[in-house]
Length: 229
Image (cartoon, rainbow, N blue to C red; front, side):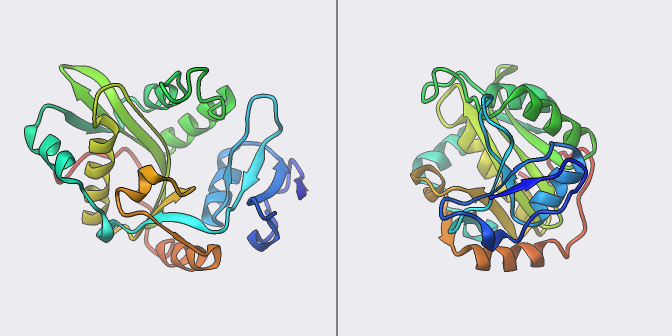
């Protein structure tokens, strides 16, 4: 495991990661380092009582937008129009809600530390980090946030307070990303939840190839709004 120097933004090659995917430790969460990390298939993930840990797991969970799967029950929810969706209207609040507490994490999602919240809010202000908000009767009931660089979206976390709120957010986002010709959604770690939407595991080397292709597309930097539903 490589220890990063504070004033050196370079990362080691991802094939030097441990079998669990841990690549490096240390550094900081400045925008330049975070953007450099994502462009190389690396992301931070650590708890409050740990140094910054940088990961690049193998295999990698990805969702190709054109392979999105929507269950019958979720289609009914989408048709009901009981939930409304917005983009980039309250990024920090969405990220704070993702930090918990949530039913599956009653003590809170501690990996979304205060420093992480500040760092990604800064990236949102720079136009790289984005949020999807799900509303019911003017109340924020779900959402997700992530990073966008080139034609790749890096999904970070989601939360829900009513049935299907985060699922609707994901479907609406994927459909918008399709319209914008995004070609890759990074889900980082595979889980039954993301598999229900069509996510799959691919070797890290294949993921890096797809990522390099996605990064040839121009950044869609700035505040987002839905252009298609």
